[in-house]
Amino acid sequence: MVAVSTPEQILSIQDRNTGKNKFLVQNLSHSFNAAKDKTVEVLRNINISVEEHEFLAIVGPSGCGKSTLLNIMSGLLKPTQGQILLDGELLKDITTRIGYISQTDSLLPWRTAIANVELGLELRDVPKKERKNIALKLIKQADLNGFEKSYPYELSGGMKKRVDIIRILAVEPEVIFMDEPFGALDVFTREMLQDYILSLWQKTRKTIIFVTHDLGEAITLADRVIIMTARPATIKSEYPIPLPRPRSPLDIRFDPKFIKIHKRIWYDLKEEVQKSGE
Amino acid sequence: MHIINKQSIMINLWRIFLLLIVLSIWEISARNGLVDTFFLSQPTVIIKDFVTLFFSGEIFPHMKVTLQATFIGLGLGSLLGIAAAFFLVKYKFAERIFDPIIVALHGIPKIALGPLFILWFGLGIKSKIFLALIAVFFIMYFNAYGGFKSVEPRLINAVRLMGASQFHITTKVLLPSSLPWILTGFRAAVGLAFLGAIIGEFMGSTAGLGYIVQYAGHMYNITRVFSTILVMTFLMMFLNEGVKLLEKNVLRWRPQGS
Image 1 (cartoon, rainbow over the protein chains, first blue to last red):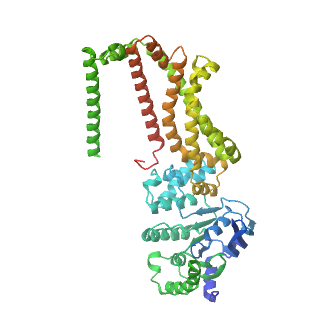
Image 2: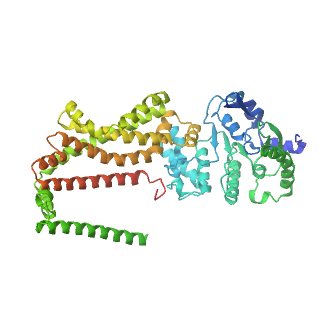
Image 3: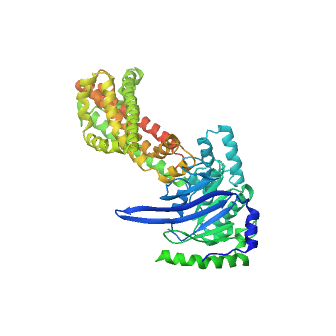
């Protein structure tokens, strides 16, 4: 089943985005050897194109290979087949043009919040003074004033996530990957962070690829949602999300349009969730 | 907090009280001839001798010699132990060759090497440094090795994705992450280095706290043996406090009480 977008929907998407292909995944397949003579196929012939400034969400059942896909897309893992293009250039290795935010918090526990935010700048040899100014500005924007000198263990889950996010923003990547970034957090914190991400995207217009197993989250945030099948993962279908922006994660789910879209995609996704549960 | 403080004061008072009781019994028995002061001396005489050792300045050159051997052995042993662990964790092939060898060598009672070191490096400070070094090396190697191995891959990956080079991964992730392990080893290593230096002095030397104890023992000067042991005890207490302070400062990033 492939979703058909109405002409208005297509127009509204193109209206928002520049139409320029920022990031391309071409004919990507991946498998690994689980044991002698036994290969597991994780990804099969995946093609994704992401436009500049687009907010794309990829949804699939748990364990379908979404994280493997992101690891390949970020250059951490070499695919068995296929290629990744960033601005038309072949991506061969890790690049700082891509920022990666993972599910588990990966702040360095021995660094204070501000030192964590400065880390990426430190790696680029940005002078100390400038580093500090950039970090302080981001900390202020993220409502973390007064916590600059706190160590990660002194911060709440939501605060840590915000530090994690601004740490990536500090080095100004062109594309940001998020791998179920709010998976480990409680519902309220999640909604607050979704709100935060939306306002960030509204301001910076970074290209974002957001991976989640939560369909509601995907619809709330993204311009377009891609549904993946159970393993081996392929792209099952694609839906534009023609909901107006700015959106509020707290209210949007009661919007009849949201409910309609959610229902339609959910039937599509349900099959895959059932399959992966078997 | 308040209750804990009160409690710890009580505990300290009890400790002092018990110590005073033991010393009093010792002192009274010595005065009444219940114990032979030739073998056991007596607390007041020991303390007097302890004070004289400091006021005459007699003890300082010996303290200097022992501490020098301790610190040099501690420093070199730590560096070598950490470097060896780092090298073997980095190069799997070398690890497979050398790790079993290091484990086997660790089985040697290090004290037994004393006479050899004195034969090879002489009666001077060198043999003591080596004895301290060899004792420190192993514990630092094992702790640093454990620390390097337990670095969380997700932290390394996250920093790599931010564009870190191998060098940066080492200095910004690997080393700070294994610091708690290394410091735990260091705490034990301080005692071992001190012990190594003193044992070396027992075996053959011309100066040092170990030398004084050995010499006084031969002269049946039991009071001097006890007062020098007291000096060693205080030094070790200072060293321990120093390491504790270091740990507290360096590991501020860890939740309290862990």
